[in-house]
Length: 421
Image 1 (cartoon, rainbow, N blue to C red):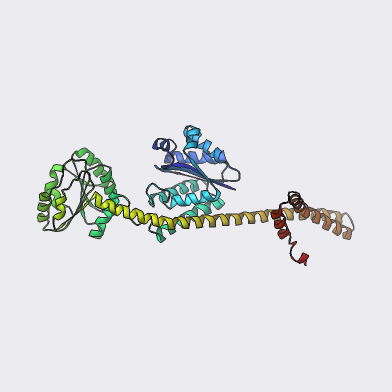
Image 2: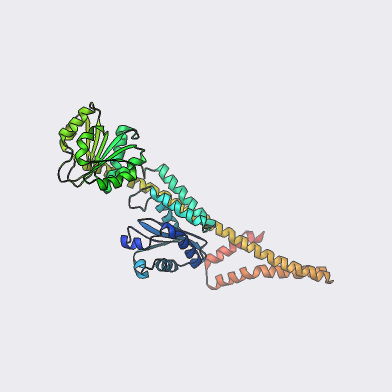
């Protein structure tokens, strides 16, 4: 039985190529069925995200070239280009890879948790189509188990590794719970959009988006159920905000010391937390001199992020050991299962030989043949039938001078057990 993992990701291929081989949810059923029909796989799964497309398969006889050819043909991309930008893992390396992916060890952002959910979704697609069988099911369940263990026993996902996430986590440390905090977001670009998403994950109910153009702010506000104001309206609304996070492309500061000072006075000096993620800065540095204003710049957060990345790298080393151990344990279990299957097949074959000879003897006995002679003949024939395959194996091992095979066969036949006594 062969296990194969074949794919491309952010490390091996450009976004243009990744886009070409991505699978939309609408195309997943057709793709999985086509893959099964082409490869005759007993287990298969497709993981497709913005950063990776990966195929996992298990089959009796399967080559990576067949899988690669199918992927190229399904998407109509150049097979040579795909081969140059893809990776292939087999057997234990394939097991280790799917576990590393689920744990976030192969992600663009080390330890990010979203990939586990995406692997689970891929598994559900395949499972619902009846494409997850036997030990492939065991592999996926063991993958989920090691991912859970990595999350609970290491700090792989404990610390923020983006300034957007770090700003929200820092606010959470200061305010304990963000649910009742009022937040003013200045700007409507990618960074602020990411901040807004993290705030929503913290159940923040009151968010206002301030931007130079209302149309862009309204697009973002619609996604997060926020209010919208212009930059010119900030002075009249600033006192309402407990948290201010700014990231614009403005060449001049948007919040000055005087504006923040007036807002604090209106708040009766209730503390205000401000984060400036912009370069050049959106908030004058002098704001940090105010007693009740807690100002953090992108440089402050970058130091936190770098410390957290170092912490995640340390946790990743622990996680890698767990993955290696679990991958090896799975392969040991799989090999044990194969030996059980081999023994079952050998027993069934021996029983078939016995039953065939027994049926023939019973018929001959009914025809009046001498019972003693029948017993002798049956014993000889059964002995010859059972000894023929191992005798041939012993002969081949002796002719090739394969000491390992000879020793294995001696142990299998009990030939070194005190000469049979």
